Image (cartoon, rainbow, N blue to C red; front, side):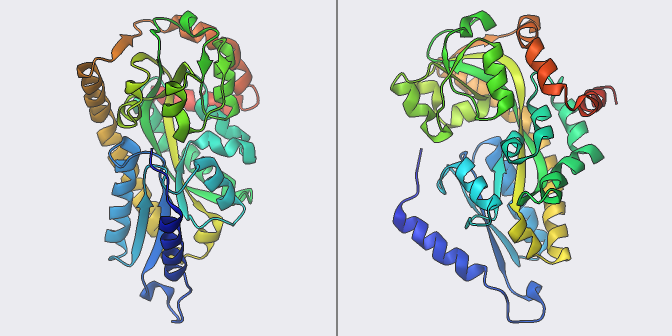
Length: 337
């Protein structure tokens, strides 16, 4: 995985400061505005392509006066660190794509609901939620709480699956395995329910951690697993679909407040477009990824009946939804609409 060099970072820093100077003109929309965006995944992943669609739509709607400068492959650094610096108003990054539950530790406790195992029946179920007024409430929540960022739009990367250096045929096979999951309570609780040994590893270090035998299992959507070449060090994947890879693009409150109402509306409209684009490509790219992985010799195990997995997670689901039962039930109800 590429990491940014000090020289490259210096160039980006100089460029960013130069582009973000306040205009001397009365109308700030008369000058070109550059917003830097961080993306941990490669440009060819679902999220990378969604970001690119967002960038293109912003340029179109602003008549090229607003530019989203996207840096892929985690080149701007650790995602959690960038988010924390954005929240503190100290980051050079304006926009970042995150997992919604990354905001849980900053006070958005309700966001844990989106990581509850088996919350969404399928992709269509998720998009009914993502296009609802409830989802809009989620997006505005951190800003309204003064946390330091504002959600622009939701996306998804397909369902997340476990992959391993060893064969996994059932939930039982995960017991006592060294597992890397995202550092949020919902995923940690899922790992505990499956009786694994949670091993903290930054996303950018997952590949090397497999190679050095520090971890035995991790989890990602299929296309991320492919594009990050994790199959080279962990050639076994079980399609358990424990959690949908929900993503959210957020902007720092500092950057948001510096925009005009018209510029804010452009970002929101472009976000809606990018979400629809994500929905369009998600299933197709996931299917292509699985076909490619199979051709590379990856041992792919399909889960025909996930009742074993649901049963193992039953207590975790009950705990994670107890505080926001109404929200949980409301999200479940979208499946019937």
